[in-house]
Length: 545
Image 1 (cartoon, rainbow, N blue to C red):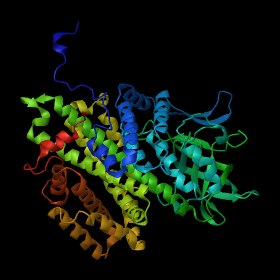
Image 2 (image 1 turned 180 degrees about the horizontal axis):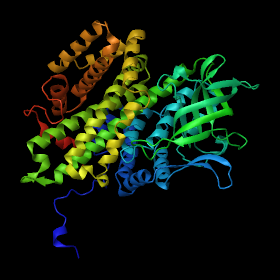
Image 3 (image 1 turned 90 degrees about the vertical axis):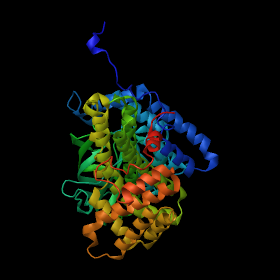
């Protein structure tokens, strides 16, 4: 019998057994907005199925187990033979299998594929973010593979397959594969032009052997990796399979696994190529950066989507807790100051979701204008949204008080994960400089951006002033590199504001424009003007059907 002093009261029930997709109004509305009518019913049913699974107690437990029992490196078998394998908890494989089966690596040729896949990625990674890494890289590898049609003919159908097979064996004998990438090295980091890995051509056309290393190689149990190395003609992209066609293991030595702050379910390895590592050239010699840029852009968008998913889950947990927790005579969510905090967090989360889904829709459109928009909006979004993730998750954790600081709440895991997307695929400075590069070299990119934000002109005076402010920044390029972060931030905020003014409920757009564009707020969350309709903003963010 439970002691009277330990009777549990005034505690929020666990947030499980709900549809993660349907309960996310911003996300479900974005799917309805960006997909053609004839695709909507099928897409919604797929996403509801994934949403119910993600919100289930079973899948939530898989996420906890995958992180509680992180991967282990096995360099040798019991007989001393080199095997270079990583062991994962079964929960990791179950999560990957579910995401692959949901089509999260299949977007490029499916009607509405990028919007459907982006929404699914945001849903699935709310249960566990780490497994999104191999899913993201496999999806993003497709445009790089297409630089070498013969390779794409073999590997692309396997990459977009809905079958997950964990065993390492020749790709020809598998129904589906995962693909990764290895670009950075110890001495170079984000400066991939400093790569020293060398590629020596063999007699057979397109075949090489590699000598060198990769400092970060995530998901090393993938079936093949796109890597950069120096061939005689310059920096070149190569496909490095883990298993060769004859069944033998390629020389792919895993030196150690990184001991990371978060993302602990996902293995990130240091890899060595010993001079016999077989590789197949992808694209032309000397065109390695051009070949991988399509892959990098796609993974950068996934960083935006991944951060938006983390924010959404953190906000859902905070609103859920505050709706059930009573303090000072009533539910926390009804207290004016807590309502302000929750509304401010909800606005940030919705702005990230709307922007990420708009960029996914641009991929589906494929027009010159939409592709030009991506070239400037993706690095701006990647810069800003991923940086907002940490403070959002930290504030959401605080909404749970001491309960949020305890591992069982799940918020510490979200907080450890929250800086990751800002670091991966080029940290903040790289993204801000890429915005400048697009401004300097691609006039169509700026034109597409201005046309996009111009769609909302006249709807809100605070947005109009912010647009004029961006134009003023662009008119004065003196010392622009030193203020590239400021410019990327302003461009991202104006784009978010324009999208919310066009598509979000008035109370959400009003709060965003007041807090982010109008200067009528403090530096911390929870400082929105009290005259706004904050109750409606919080109610919209509540994770209930």
